Amino acid sequence: MLHAESPDEGTAPIAGAVDDPERLASLRRSGLLVDRSGDVAFDRLARLASRLLAVPVSMVTVVDAGRQVFAGQHGLSEPWAGMRQTPLSHSFCRHVVESGAPLVIDDARRDDRFRDNPAVTALGVIGYLAVPLATPDGRVIGAFCAIDARPRTWTGSDLSILADLAAAAMSEIAHLWELARRRESEERLHVLVSEIDHRVKNSLAVTRSLLEMQARTADDAYVREQLEEAAARVSTIALVHDRLYGHEAGGTIRLDDYLRHLCENLATSFGLPDDRIELDAAPLPLPVDRAVSLGLIVTQLVTTAMKRRTDRLSVSFVTAESGDHMLRVADSADALSQPDAGRSTGLGARLLSALARQFGSEAEIGEDGGVRLRIPHSALE
Image (tube, rainbow, N blue to C red; front, side, top):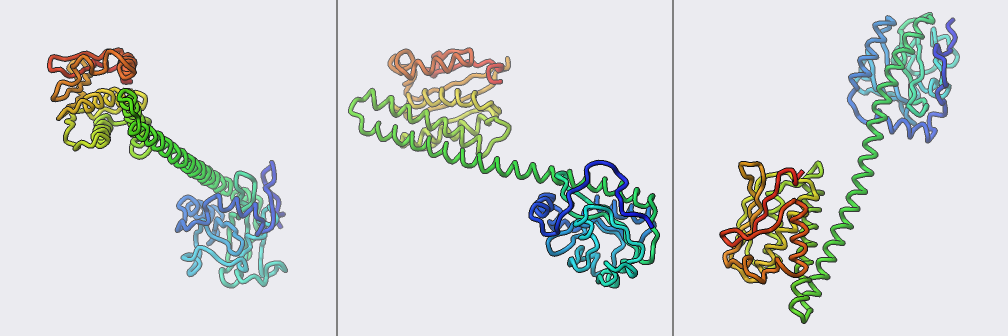
């Protein structure tokens, strides 16, 4: 009779009670208890085992606290083939889990340990050969077994074949384990990012509200304007955050979509209809930092014009034949071309100049009275 010894050398798998919490945690992490309606890879391995060992039934089983589940099977009769599980009362594989070693049974009807097991009559388990299946942390979660409906004298070659197939099954289990680990990491990251997003949104909203409140109560006109502009800049950054977190991917913002929402928000903040700002922008994907800088430039120019009660504005970002880009903001009252429009003095002017230099450009007045910046394509990368 073949002795139940593993043909492979190395660290022995960790055996334990079926209801051991650590073992059950490893089993659940594998994802094999989820209703998979049969796994193609494990079914294929079970079919190969039946062919190589000339047995009618082979199974890849995992042992839960109250049942054994067939992750892969070949040759089972109904209802077991459809149910893909049995109660532990029908399980030989639980003994493999508890011992952590191969189990060899030539004739279960003559074995005092198994002759009364319901699987002998219900599933026709007479000859039985099994090797343990373990997760990457070494916990034995089930067995790869071959079943014969008649007495069988198993050989060392039989055990070696089944051990090789079990190794292939454990490679698949390790793959599922890694996928589960990645899903867990992604879920934790999603929760963390959601929390950060919530806090950032709240912080920006509170900051903007405080600035607007201070602007409303400021007696000095200059201070009031600076506070209003600061609130508009915070709104610009908040919009980038919202578009990036909620809608965009890959760390880029689509320019036309972003500018449209930015102009709508600016019009709303000044109590103007959305159609007061005409937009013509290319659907250009931009890195976040470039989008923020362009948004701040547009915010500065649009708020300057709106404070001078212009009737209508136009914002455009078009690509020239040379490949460079032209950002242009103009208003119907030519407010931006006036000497006191805030481009040559004050905080707004210094901010506009600094932002323009980021793109290797500078703001200039066009023949139509609008402000324009010529931006090399390389400055947007």
